Image (cartoon, rainbow, N blue to C red; front, side, top):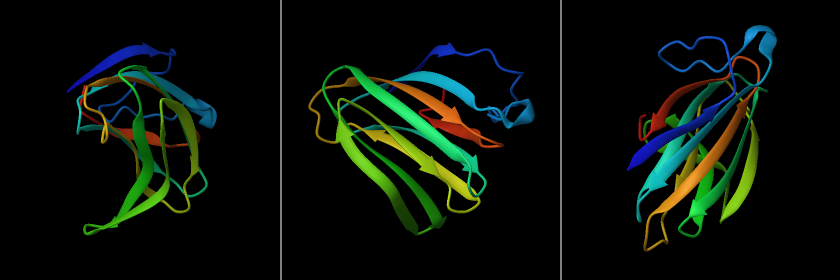
Length: 136
């Protein structure tokens, strides 16, 4: 699986965790491309405070359609799916109900071939990206 950085709006310097907040709490905008083989997934993990918002728009540029969800892991054994869907393009806006880590996942579950997905992510407040899967 490959992760390709395709564009980033100019922002202040990032720390190793790819911090997503900007001075004054203005939204941060990131854009990435994911190559997702059949049966695999790509994910961005975000640390958010209660009430902060993240928007992820995606389009499958090559290969078909994908399934997506926004989820969290309140305990090591539990997964809570906050929203989900599927299609060749779409978007999801999520407002954190509480402080914590949340994941935006795109999965090539039904595909028989690889897909190329472009994701545009906008984060508000002090929300920050903590990791990408696969990592860049």
